[in-house]
Length: 512
Image 1 (cartoon, rainbow, N blue to C red):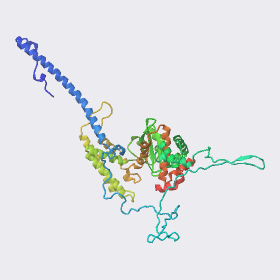
Image 2 (image 1 turned 90 degrees about the horizontal axis):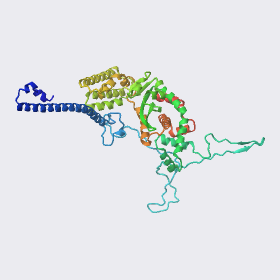
Image 3 (image 1 turned 45 degrees about the vertical axis):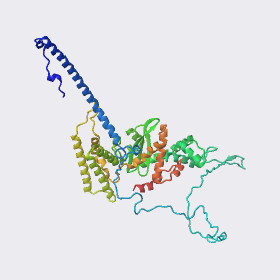
């Protein structure tokens, strides 16, 4: 503390001052006035310093928080790669290997082969001898070399006219008219293949409807409006209702499912698209909420009895009937950040443990289980990293307590608590090989939603989001099933979407 005048000089009482001669008394009184002014000024300065200290601490915390945000990227957090920018050099989580880029040694190439019966044959015949100039028109030649060009013929729209004939019965004289097919309803319309192609462009490649119309005009010379494309999407949404019911039943019968969610702007508000997927099927749903209410409405997690792989979003753990497995790709990114930006050594040790465990699982994948001694080694190293991390954070001074809420903790301590509490879920993959190391399947499926948002923007209406989710579920599942997507969409447009239950034997084979 800074010494003040009150500590170095005591004011004289009045009875003592009265004994002094007048000049001395006047001088001492003036000193008293100066001292009192200095004391008041020092007191104000102390109060100002105290206020400044109270203001500086939150600012320091805010600066540290902003610096931490700037340090985060797609390699050490859950931020998407699109947020990294072009100037930042991002470190890959993959370890370096001796492999060169491109196909590896022993890779079997898949070059295109010539076909035996080409559609068009063009013979290139020499007109004259290149040596003496003799005309070779009447000389029969032989083919010495063949080269084939795979080309798309100019697209031509086929107009199919349906005519209803009327015939008069010679017996009773009654006139009977032929019946048009159910799908031919107007004097002019587009066929199912055209309708399916609009959905294919919009929901597989996320092309905005205005540009879809341009494609049809440029390639097929067809004039089609954005409203017509939207009508076809609504029609497809209705036709796929039976598929969605079948899809949910298929997912509920799976052994392992992946779950994830992402935000999406809809009606100028934040909405959430949820995904439940496996290697063979995908279900997208949209909801106003992110948590358990949305998951309940989707109808998968509340009724699922298998193994659920997801990130550490707390509402997932509300479902006690499932076996939970956590995404360790998330953990590796967070541990990278804690180690590199916060200089916490335990995070590097934990990261090495998880990578080692994953490599060991790959080595023993044919055996189907890890030897007990390796499991014990992994769990021992895991616990040791946790203990060292907790000891390190215990040695640090606590963060300033906020006026409301719980005592704030450092990011490393929060991660430690999660890893300690959910150890069984984090290491599920070393005891059960059917549970993957990461939630990459769910993240890859949900990434398509962000790609759609980047290309075509958000949804104007909630019903538009529902239409997208159902059609996208069908397309994603068709891709995983190996169906021709355009063909599958054509079937759906005709009112007969492909169902997973019809492909049950194939599904069981793939799962096995």
